[in-house]
Image (tube, rainbow, N blue to C red; front, side, top):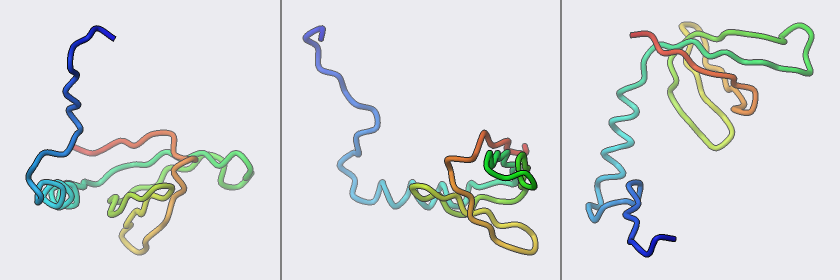
Length: 85
């Protein structure tokens, strides 16, 4: 170490409502996106692109709202996400 104090930018500030405000901001900021997924064990669903809005992010799952349904995607199979502008 260089002997200097490192101020962690992700450390929560003293405002107790900051976390809730950030969550609310994230929830309203979701846009339509394409999610590129690879299921290596499947022959039928090997490379798939899902389109919809991400409505929830959990530890190992991503919840995506499509026009007619809601799907859960394991995050370990997600390659990348493209957001529409």
